[in-house]
Image (cartoon, rainbow, N blue to C red; front, side):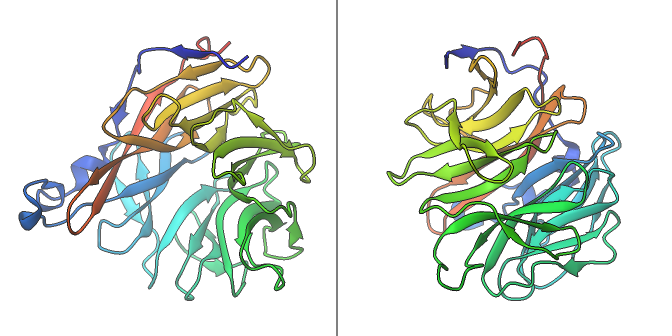
Length: 309
């Protein structure tokens, strides 16, 4: 059963990151007068439910920032050549995993929550991205292209110890698997899978790779899945209604609930609060013309526990 239940988008609030920008950074005049457009994306709640890590090009290059969602204060954690992005907190909140291109290609790094002790864990000459911690904090799940020198064209799922050792391959398929995360009990993985026909699906599998199956399958593009803290639901983005909006699927019943209704913009990269009562996500706007620009702001939305039960 994959019925879509439409509900009003309640408690949709922008994080105060927006208020931190200069007037020049917020200008949206004619293309010839454009000063800057800022993309704040890939937000991740800390285990304390207050701090949010995210990536931003507010200073020109993508770096990792942390904002206190209550006080509105923010800190820049990285400042290295190349892009830093897709942060993920360790379960105890002491470290952040992220991907960095400071070495010329995308690698998995970790750092302390204050930005100190930045370490390259993957040390791969190909391309690693989208890190996510295991529930016990012992391992990091990630996507890689080319860990196998004989196959450097596809993205598969891997994991490694939190110190970068014992790299293990989880999937080996002709399809693309990215943006993966473990279930809260560590027994399953969800990911965004690009099928051979070009369609994207949200796919759940056993933690070591077997038994993959699509949840809430649809001919439209689905992606950016995120487990709820209780493991009963997955939030994801879908174009099934014509625009990129946020949905939640109940894993037991298959019931799908639509959370957002914004035809002009795209909502992506949802991350649950630790109490499961809200999501933080990036809302994208595209500006056509030459050059082509995108911008994104971070928002939170309340999610009633009863709405999907």
